[in-house]
Image 1 (cartoon, one colour):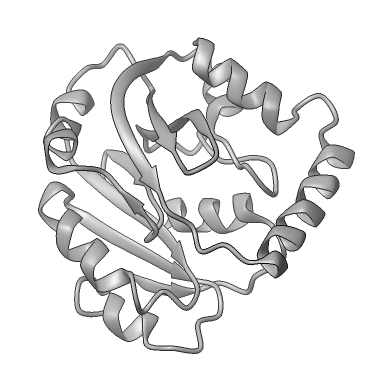
Image 2: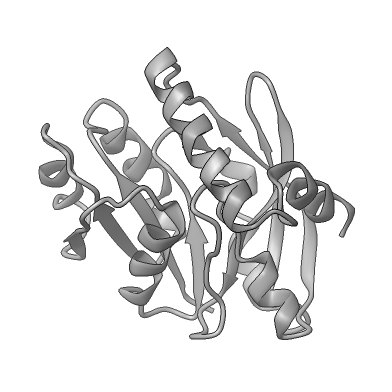
Length: 197
């Protein structure tokens, strides 16, 4: 089955070229949604794909992700960010996973310096599968609404985000908004559910 890689970017010129070079042979299409880069991010993206789109950022990761998957045309969606890495031996497993009709999506293990969480990053392209939550966005609720299954994998995503106080404060602000909007869907509960499934 074919795979669309969908990523959202902003000022990723230092990471994007290496990221796309490493992953391009494992996917059939690349969709880049840029949320306001002031550097060469879009120019670099255009070396790898004609599907580069602008999106006006409105403090909602789910909206940006959903915009990206609407631009995809292949059977399965792979969601990643330029500051993430999947090693070659795990990238080689992706195609085989998409051949299994039992699952609507697959859970990977995202590891960063301070956390480990289960996260559904590979899923079938369907209109009914979309992201929710403005931060710590997830497709899991929409897959569960379809009574679909999410398969477990041992694929690891190494996440190496750029840290700054400004970024942490901004994410905390979004998290507080998320908790008001979805009080029964805290990040901790969501991660726990994804890890247990």
